[in-house]
Image (cartoon, rainbow, N blue to C red):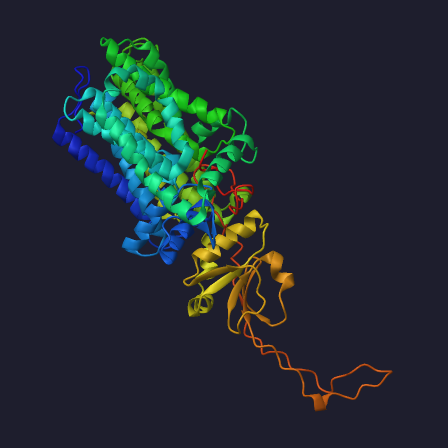
Length: 629
């Protein structure tokens, strides 16, 4: 399945490939495993939103409707909610099971990156590309987020691999065409109109291969079958809500295309990509340039390289930049191709470990001086990171004295220690039997150790530590577990309030409903009240707990009016008075569950991302994520 058939593409034998893929999978599982278990919490936007929708699917039995409480909200498709709901059904309700579809999709993208690279590059470079993708910060972050993005990337890569197999394999081309066609409908089910971006980007390569692909009956069958789940979902939604689903999906698309809610400058991705995937875009750019300068003896293979490795990622970047909504996670679609191009560059540079030919991007072998400079430059960067980590851990630098920054010192120490091996490998290159392989591993070691440290400290998996800590207090859990708790919040709701709303709902063992009013509630009912509605609370509600402005209140029996014989006779000159004041209802102890101020609500991720603190109430309001352009 993973064999290359081009005469110019060679590599290790199958046993070596199996061992390498096994080690790659093990490295991924170790990284993921370090982030599992306690402490663990979801990010409100958008992990919590999808997790709540999946929970409502199971609690209501309605698999057609993505909802926000009792209201249908078709601002996005339902594929990832189905995946999370299925994970909940199989393994129970917890944060790790909500993230399981993204984790499995991340593992699939590693294998598919290797499979695609195995069709285009030597196998050693394909393996290196998968390793680079594994230690790319932005990719690793979203491999642990219960969102649409990683499943969509897995479907895209599966479809592209199917196309490559269909045109280059003599065995079962119709089957591979079916796999490729299937990805279009499934991609739409996961993230709506976003599937159109890779379809446009791959159009030049598709038209070049049109004589083969247009005659592939499996491709057309896959296109039809892939849209069947979408059609069934839309039909089921139409039976319940009429044309609401189609109307809101298109309304969301045009809203994101025309509004400035998530607008960034046109050059946003030019700096955001290097920042979120450092240092691999640097090597990817060199590989992209060499792709056009390096001559190939096989003209057809060269064109295949240029159209898939050169034109496809370039068009992806142009299309994403031309769309008005620009967010960092859209760049996930570029990362496998950046990894493939970076692997080409590192492989080319490694040939200069024992040679000293003249340097040019189009040359077969780079100068030894460039390899030396890169090794020492990143070794020096590693040393600076270690010095910064020691300063951070010591607490003697006033600007770095915040205790919440201490875990990042360990991250910098691990990353710096890994990169510090690069100069040593270069110095020992003449003595090492596999100097190039060890040099590759040295490049990957630093980021891998850094990400392992990040997950050890749960910096990516415990996204709301303060809220989690507050709601885990035994007294609060006792109140939440005794009975279902409703929510009273009236639109419009601002971003921070909505964020806390999602967190409170996620951490409610027995989730109630959203209330339009709390009048006429039975005694004993408990309700979380939004900060804006606290001033409107009736007198017969007791305050039981508080959480960042939200109040947990309980309805009590109103005090009966005093007997008529206790009322003083009214005179024309005086109003009626009460001889004895009515006793107030006995107040239950109030539990303050405000988070500790030393713990940030949302720890900074590896790469900064714009705050998406919007309310997903309706299409014409702010949304939590521009997920269906």
